[in-house]
Length: 303
Image 1 (tube, rainbow, N blue to C red):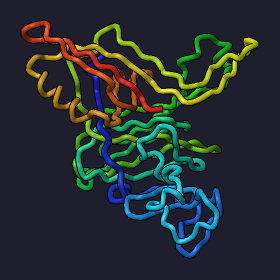
Image 2: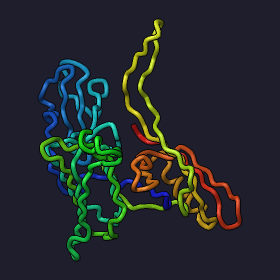
Image 3: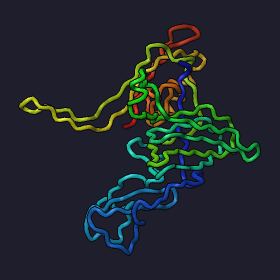
Image 4: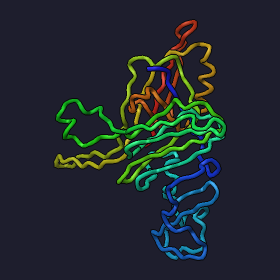
């Protein structure tokens, strides 16, 4: 493995989400002149606010959802904005394809898509002077579990759910277009993170570990029968790497700035299991030598 990569997310707002083919018509827009019943849902779309609310009471009239928590509960972002809400548990969905255009107005060289349901993904970067400077389409068919001819012919098609692109050229004025295609079905994306890549260490050492934390309920009753309720899970990873002593202070400042901040951590682009969207739980640097030290980093993903 090479150096550990981390992508702090660029905040996607009304100003830089130039376009989207996903309609924002989940529910009717909240209106002060409408009386809502218990369980009714509305959307609120004001500058940089795109949320779904549910009424908690009957006879709910002229009470703005954002400022009346006893009358309304926030459900989620609207469908268009779920892929940008920094949560893995909600997903933007659209028939056949999701096409978004982002104008970052700064250099971005990393794109990560998580929770994909799609056949392919196209990432295109267009500079106003040089034109198209990056255009790559990735087929998401996953052949990693095909190890014999029987599986090749009879197993259902498996597709990757995570896509990482870390080779975008550095253009500060370029426009990013992402096309997620699932022709004949519903295209989905839970999380879209774009940003500028930071590199940590000289290379991840052998012995890295990856896994999940399962939040499903597994209980046994008085007769020995298990009650199983499937729930969300989060990914975990532990990486050790060498760090030059001249970089220790800069590394500590970087990680301190990213505390309690969901980021994309990439151990290896070729292994989705080493791609964690979450935060670092703990890190330490052991100064063992005059020029090189050992850094240990524990990561915990969002559900």
